[in-house]
Image (cartoon, rainbow, N blue to C red; front, top):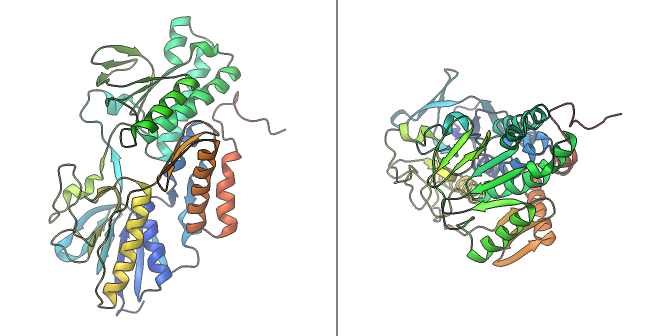
Length: 408
């Protein structure tokens, strides 16, 4: 490697990190570009709910080698455990040390349980493919066990509670409402025993969206058979009971989608200023305040609209351009936050979509969402690979022998 080259290190292989690396590669910057991530694949979080309901993980699990094949980006599989701003160095769990001239931290967020007793131990998280597959395995085992249980035990096993009425909880609740009917039929379980509750602490689900959208989506969920319960606060959970302020729910399946916090590594970095949410305070160029050449993007940046995939993508593209400008000793322009579009699938063939300020519901909203998925795949993959990933959703990947598709 040419020793005169500047070293750009990007930490995190999610939307923001991938976007930054691709932008720098396209700009052909005179620098080495290293992407350090703890997974060899990119997880398309927007489609994660489909993995739980039998779709192939390949639809949302894209190898990084496919994304960066033929580019100047070097992908290193390691987990960064320490960031030393004073020496411009990172330490990985592998023991490796990474020096940088420019650093981009795009570590995203992790599940927050708000110290509610029993939740972290007993509830199912929903922020990774690993968690999604674990939940799918549990659902198969729960339904398979119903055949040998007494009636009251069947009701408990077939009762699914989702806590958190944001986009993730809403999407998964709708998908499960349809999918559990298929599971019930295959496991010879009376579908009337199935109960799906969506619990939200706020007065309505999807609280960040216009109230009119929340109302339409709530009606759609109820038509699918989901019990939407707002103004409910979770107190604790044990093995078979979820305790709310005013009621208890018997269930073996609690899915927690109600909280997220910035990756814990940010809290350990000496020199970062954090806001009340634990996000890193950044300047108008998405640099950590009072820290030269260190950018923080995505969920952990203390800026408007952080926490959305589209925002992380925009952050990555902007920072890629900003680093290119800095390498040329030129002046950059300030980052301007922009509101994002939304597309919330609510069961197969139906979505609530806000695009360019207009609201679309039903099949049109669904196709707009799928078009957005395809457009993103085209932005990170060659045409043939993008189409292959997009069509993987048709492939069933079931867990138990009863539900596995017949290959004969």
